[in-house]
Length: 308
Image (cartoon, rainbow, N blue to C red; front, side):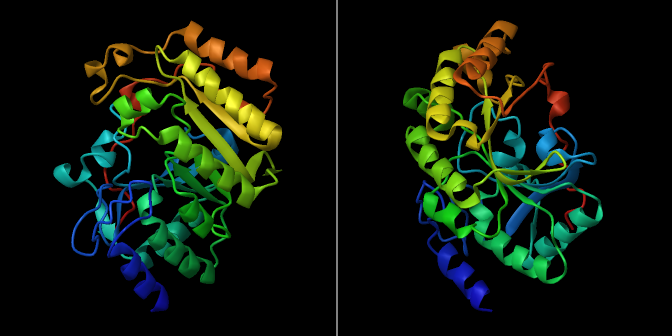
């Protein structure tokens, strides 16, 4: 009951993310689109996540609806931006959320992969407490946009084993134009430092990451030099204390074709030049995609499977 009261108090004027919108989520929706209960679009075993979190059977993904960014190229835009309009996803109690975590474990998932979880941190903590009382033991992966408050990340200490943040932009103009968050890098770099602080040292077991930080970066067409600036910062700040994942899977979806540089897919040269730069900096804990994984066929169908 104490936890439930705390959740209600926090959600009455929500400031969990850098938007600080102060929305009363008990009686409406925040900037993120989230209300009082966690809204979930899909629960699945996902084989296409990085091998260090997917293992042999796949990561146990829980796709939450809503997002605090407004990325114009979002592949999951139907649930991140338009879930309320399209009525995708189902609201679940914290008790049901705990059951979902246990069910993913029973399916043989390598990890519990919480996708876009920021706006439901309080519900997730409550559900993890309940699930652990019933034998939940999977490594918990916090798979987010990187646009996080350090204070919210601190709340997850002891709950999250692996942080899987995006690091999208160095340039503030690109962040503003494409995601509506001019302060993206200045916010994300503080959040990622906090993630490393509370999970270090990076720990592997049977080729699976069970503790640490894996930073994802999607290389955007026409922005390889911005990618290189991000890599410079990551190397100077963390060196080999983190894993990085360089992705070539950009697909011009949602509103991308409204923006000249984003109308096309990534070239082999653009991607390989970023990979080579990472190697030259000294990165060896670097995951790359040898073949293009772009295309709408890689986007999940939001069927609501295993939610209710």
